[in-house]
Length: 125
Length: 125
Length: 125
Length: 125
Image (cartoon, rainbow over all chains, first blue to last red; front, side):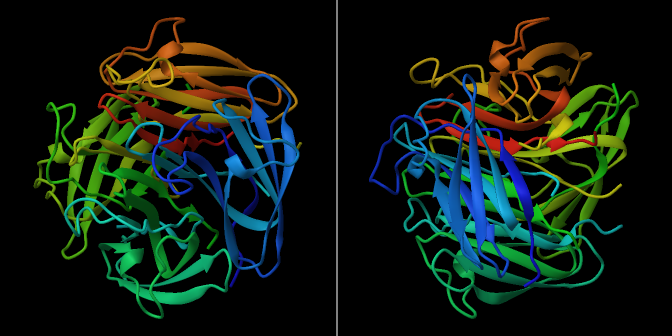
């Protein structure tokens, strides 16, 4: 398949809700970055997290094999440091091959869950 | 009407919730790809589904007649194989004429439904 | 202000839920196209509605004065014909000056409302 | 880090719900513009608010330091004037360095919250 995507992406919104309702892990509140690598080469992806009141954290390294998708929960990132709960953040996603990036949140702080999603902003390669 | 759209699109997020509340089929949890063909020629659309742990499935063939829209539920795709429930996926959508692609989910796993939607990522033609 | 926007836009998703909960008109289920005209000239906007099983309807004429926004509910369009309830549709939005178009739905079919929104697809001018 | 983003953005949808459920300020209904400045220079951001029935208000001045994100609630803008509650608006966001802009709403008018989000429309620099 011809490749599709870009190598630099950004998500300006980020927030991991501090609590949840419903069965874990399916209904745990989470903030997700969905990565699609439709190329025939493995993608080495670097995520940098930006905050409102301190220097950026990262890069967080994520590998997405050729012809695979990975839906990464920010909640699960731990190296170099966990992403703090209940604070505003943003992220820049860089890859060595073209990928497609989408941002989704499941918020289950109240009894019924809420969802949001958007394709991330695609920068120039 | 002058045509509008692109011939290659991608959606990095995909997930068919495993259960539902409310009357079927209106309130059945579903993941939808909305296709708009505003041209005067029928569109032959091919959807390829990507997974986290195995090779892509497809192509799924969908025909969108000239000057028509089709809102395709991933739940309803069956040839060459149904899309599995409750697993992460992503998709690439290719058409022989320019189309517009939007991604929508209705999640009714809990008593009240949640919605998300985004225009898909438009690749270069 | 320097103008911002495009003259041709598309929304592939469209659906007016058939019923509602909560006080009208604030909580009536609705499908909205938000139009921003940041230019210094009035915009003459034409909306064409596409269906899955019949020829397009329209154009619906909407005027957006200079330096104004209009949030148009598809529910309120009546000339040349009301937009049917509970059926899939899509739309193309054309303007004689650059505008910005965003798509939002409030779904109050169940007791708690759900929301979706996305910037529409911007075609080439 | 190489910069990512644009200097001119627009959001056609805007609405601050008139009431809320749940603990403040976390669950107060709000309309947010998320700004990411991934450059090494402070960003001077100007937000102009457009209405349906009167001249635009603004500019509202927001500073986003180098390598920082700010999630600005329209509810909190006060100079030159508060953004009115319960009315339709739209916004144009201009910056002296490239930024990334995303629009999010939490609507808690009913007992369970609803969410929407989209990357804003990126104009030409």
